[in-house]
Length: 469
Image (cartoon, rainbow, N blue to C red; front, top):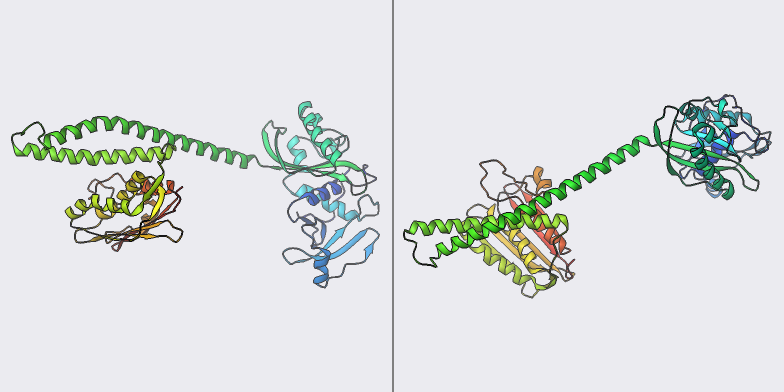
């Protein structure tokens, strides 16, 4: 706080054996501040400071500093502020009539210079001092409030509430923690305040009053409320989306299972020849398309369950090597059809972890399936499995595919995001595979990381802990 020199003292003294309320109130609030706080005059001299601001006597001695001689009006001590600047600190004796009058004037000016509510009251909660900022808010002058109470200005209900807080400080002799409260000004607008109350007097003598400081946090509170409401709305929208996806997935799966079932019967000619061979081929296309669509719907349903917290794992000891082998067998035909080499390098020993075999296989199928899908003909996808130092499993899936641009890396794990999202995109899929795989791995207590370069391929690393989640 920066004060102007030469300011006249405010009226309102008379309590605490001649102590000036403005001076004592500011000193009390400076002392109560949890941060290093001080008041300087126009010449750079420190009028008052709390212990957090002034260095300890041992620090002054270590720096070769010598305290000045004590004067009748108090002591002036040489010290260093935390930023290394040398300052003069006036250490005053409360209640001494001979104390330097300039100090009181500077402190009163400092109280008017800062945009906070600041006042001092006697033991009956009557105002002895009020800074200009608070007086203007209440629609009065600083002189007009002398001898009046908060109840006189803001009504009996607030007066009773304020008096209760004052009595607590008077009885304990300790400053309060900063707390939030709301009350209106003369304009009728209710504002939110961050308030602290500190005792006046004490330190061997009686507590004869209370100093109060309040900071206007109305805008900050409105911003916090707005952010909280926006967060709640986003969460509600996310829940609605998850509920919609789950409901639609259930509604789509029932007729789709019938389509797949009847297409399989026709394709296999279970009830006899279908006649023209083309009909059997058509049934095969319907069967494969239906199975692909069902897989997408299942992934969307699982992702919706994860977002809503409804997906539960069936944990049991599983052989990770067997899971990886089963995944490679499923992808073998797809890789061969796309003329992609599918290579494997699996640890010889069994690696057993606690997990859900079906969900872990689903995650690996999504990761390795993506690698096969985005690797052009003639490329290679390599799957490796090693035992981790902690007894878990380390799985890597590397491909020589198209890779992912650095600008898109932050979007890779966003659901439904597509690298080629136009109507003419070359690869099918809902963009749910990698996000779902990452969530499934996380449910196992593991981690999934992706590293990719355009034109160089992609490497996905999965770390699984031995004990699962």
